[in-house]
Image (cartoon, rainbow, N blue to C red; front, side, top):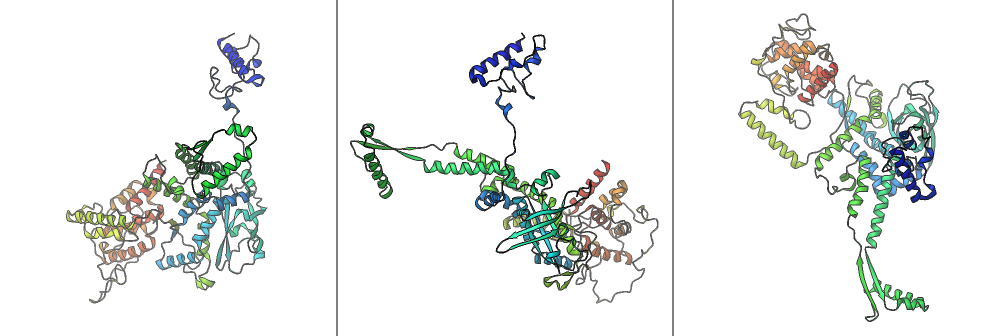
Length: 628
C-alpha cells in the first residue's frame, strides 16, 4: 500500500470515528491492489484544489463540497409593493438613482434657430416628459419593466391594439405604466430575427378608484426593461426583467434583521439582577404566588417612582450592562453590502460617510455621477423615440393649436445631452471666476494673449476654463491660393455666392455684424464664435484624409480656403461675405459634437460649444479607430 493510500485509509477511519456510521468510507471506492494508488486516493475527490492530508476538496470530509447555489422563490408583487412602501432603505435603492437621473434634466441639440429649440423645450415641459420618464424608470427598477403610452390626438381606446398610424396630428399626453399592469397577449412570429417571440400587444389593467382594461400595441409604447436576460428567462417575467429586489433580497433582509436585532439589544442593554434571601426555600415551600406578588410590587415601583424598594436585610440588586463593542462595525458590514450590490455610494444611502474608509467624498460622488451619466445614455432610447415623433407631428402646444416650428420635419442632425449633475456652489463659482480673471490679467500683461481671446471664455453657456487662442498670422505657413485642398481643383477669384463687387454702404449704415444690432468690423476677431486650431486642422487634412472627408464634404473645402484667406488678413468682399456666412453657419452648428459635425466645424474654422480640446479628442479617437 502506498503512502497516499495509507493516509486516505487513516483519514476515513478517523472521520468515521468522529461522525459515526454516516461518514463515507473512502476506501470502499478503491480498486484492486494492482490499480494505481493515486487514482484510488482521488476517486472520491471533487474537482478543484485538493489536499488528502487536510481533507480539503475531498467529498464527505470538506464541508464546502456540499455547498451549491439554488434558486429561491421569486418575490410576489405584493411583497415587492410592501418592500417599497414600508422599508426606507428598499425605497431608497430604487428612488435615489432615478432622482439623480432626472434631477437636472436634458436638452435637445438641433443646431436650429434658438427659438425653435425653446419651443421644443416648452413642448417637452407640457408633456411633463421628465416626470413621466422618472416614473417609468422607478417602475423599471422596482417591478422589472415599464412603458410610457404615447396618447395621440383623436385616438380611440378600443383601437389601441392596432399599430400607431403613420400620420399623427399631435401628442396629447403621456401615461407611465408598470410591467405589473401589462400582460402580453400577442407575440411576434418573425422567425429567427431579434424580435422573434417579443410581445406585440399587451393587455393593460389599471386599478385605482376605478378599474380600466384595454389592449395596446407595442408601437404605441416607449418601453423600459432589462435586456440582459435571454428570451427563455425573460419569459419568466412576462417579457420584462426581474425586480431590483430580486437581486438585493439577501442584503436587504440582512440589514433589516441586524437593525431590528440591534434595537432589541439596546432595549435589553441594562439588566437588573435582584437577589432575594431564601428564594429557593420559599419556592420549595410552595410560595411562588408570594414571590410573584413581590415582583409585581417592584415592577410598579420602577414604573411609577423610578425606584426599586428593597428589604435592606434580605434583598439586594445590581445593574449589569451589556457590551456593544463591535456592533457598529458589524452593522456597517451589512449596510455596505447593500451599497455594493445596488451601486449607490454609502453616503447617499445612509447620509453619512462609512467609518474607517477614506473621506474623499468628492471623488466618490464624481464616480457615482459618471455612472449615472452612463445609465442615462444607455437608457435614452425611449426618449429619442418620443422626440423623433415630436419632430414629425404638425401640431404642438396646449390643445394642439400651435404649428410645429420644425415644419413636421425631423432634423438631419440632433442629439440629447444630459445636463451635468455636478453643480458648483456659489462660493466655488466665485472662486473659479476670480482665479480665471487673475490668470487672464497676468497673461494679457505678459502678451500671451489679448483681451479678445480672454473674452471667448464667456461665449455660449457657462464659463470656459480653456481658451481658443488665435495664431499669429505671420506664423501662418500655408498660402491658401497655392496649396489648395485636393477636393478643389480650381478657385475662382470670387467664389460662387460672394459677389465680385458690392455697393458701397452709406457712411451712416451699420455693418450688422456679428448680429443685426451690432456695428462691428466684419472680421474673425469680432466673431461671436472662437476659431479652431488651424495647424491641427492642416495636419488632419494632410495626414488623415479619410477622417477629413467625414464632414463638410460639400461646402467645407471652400470654407477652409476662405478661412485661410481671412486669417492672412485679406479684406476682399468675398472674404467678408464668407465671414458673414461663417457666423450664420456657426449659429446652426455650434452645439454639434459628433464626428461629422466636428470635422465640418474644423473646415469652417469654428470651435464648437464643447471646446477645442474636446474636438481634438474626438478626431484623435477617429484616427486611432481607423488605424485599428
